[in-house]
Length: 130
Image 1: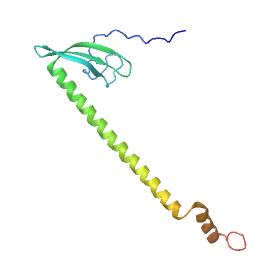
Image 2: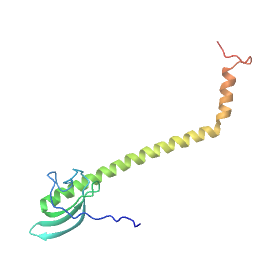
Image 3: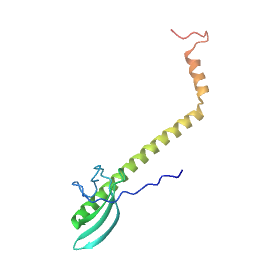
Image 4: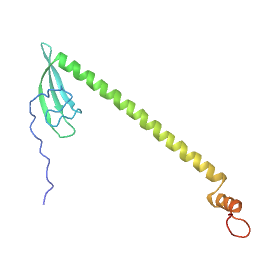
């Protein structure tokens, strides 16, 4: 009994109407270049891969198409940086809250704090105030 091998699907041509950044199969906007080289006369041969559906494609693209794709990659990279900053800030705020809570608990352990509250709210008779 052998381990099944993953077979590669042959690259397909077919440009997305949305541009090089969009998958021609699933419309994901996460398409990545895997290989490229200049063909001359302002055209580039580019191999693309979609990480969501594993679509691969290769085709020739004009310099203006590649420039638009490059701008889209830059925009996507900037979005990732902004998301990372937001996530980092949220994590730091959560950690600060946990540290502050621990500091308060060290000064007033839950058992002692509860005993203090009970002394104030429960009279010596053992009956709660009316």
